[in-house]
Amino acid sequence: MTYTRRTKDQMAARVAQDMPDGAYVNLGIGMPTLVANHLPQGLEIILHSENGILGMGPAPAQVDEDFDLINAGKQPVTLLPGGAYFHHNDSFAMMRGGHLDICVLGAFQVSERGDLANWHTGEADAIPAVGGAMDLAIGAKQTWVMMDLLTKQGQSKVVRDCTYPLTGLACVSRIYTDLATLEVTDQGLRLVDVVDGLSHADLENLVGLKIQT
Image (tube, rainbow, N blue to C red; front, side, top):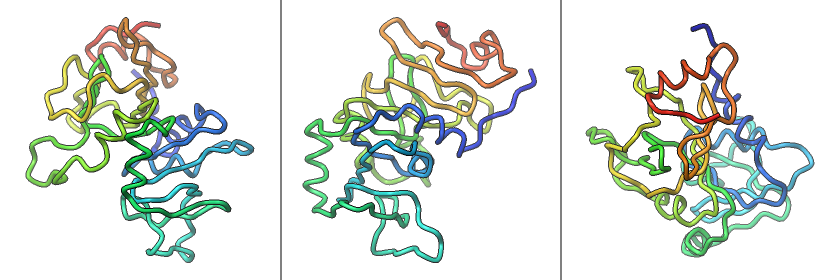
C-alpha cells in the first residue's frame, strides 16, 4: 500500500467542508479546535465553547494572544463581531437543551454503532473526568469525531465494540480520520471518502470491519 495520510490541518479542512451555513458548532479540545481556522468563506458558522463563549473566530496570531479570552481547552481564541460571553451554566444549558447543531470531538475509540469513548483509557495520566464531552455528545443534533484512524501501535480506533469507558451510546454520525471519512448508519459503516492510494479492501483490512460503499 502506498498512500499519504492527511495532516491535522487537512483533516480540519475536510471537517470544515461539511459545515452547513448557519450552524451552531462546538469544537472539542485538541485536534477539533483546528477546524476554526478552515471554515469556508462566506458562511456564517457560529462557534460555541462550553466555558461560555458564542461567536469565536480563528486562532489569534501569537502576538495577539489574550489569555483572558480562551476556549474550554485553555487555548487563546478570537471573538467575532457580535460574539458574546456568558456563564458556563448557560453554556451547558445550550448543550443539554439541543441548541447545538454539531459538535466535533476527538476520540480514543468509536464503535461501528457510533458509541463514543473519548475521555479515559485506564492510563494513569488520563484526564481526570469526562468534562463537557458527555453533554455535547448527547445534546448536539450531530456528533462528529475527528481522530487518527490508527493508534501508534497500528490498531484501529474504529472498532466493533469499545473497550474504554463510554462517553455516549450510538451518538456519533460521522468519523473524520487521516485515512478516510466514514458515516455511521443503521446498516453499519459507510465509506464517504478515502485518501489516494488506499483501496477499499485495504481500508477494511486496517479497520477489521465491513465498510459499505
